[in-house]
Length: 205
Image (cartoon, rainbow, N blue to C red; front, side, top):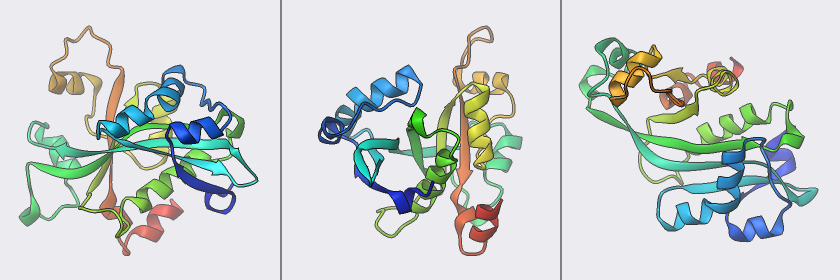
């Protein structure tokens, strides 16, 4: 589709919502959040939400997302997973946790499915959080992805990796009983892959 060519980014707040047609990405919980909670998140300093509106009809929201500050805490990770997560970090720079952005919510308008908008949006987010306008360092993007095949496939296709190798390993980390359902899986993307040396290789993959 070409988000940058056909759309403009806006804060997703009550004013924007009042100017636009109802947005639906096909998930009730996500739709409810984008319609009712983005201002509350912003006012409580919990996250900032944005959307891309179609230039030819700005009342149409093509996609939306919410970002928050977070960290990648590696202290309690199993050694094998800690080594995987920090594989590209020089030993001299090893810490207990690393700065990150959390993707709290992300959705694409159901009327714009199968146009690769989700992947295009993810590439834009990755580049955006590294721009000089963003105050502070950020090494990772992390997400608690819905634990279903479609969502996990989307993030995997966009080069996100599971922090934990198995659901049981993640349950142990969270202190969950084995019989309890794990509704999300923690996944990450190491932004060092977008340095000048690695950027072209990543975006061509």
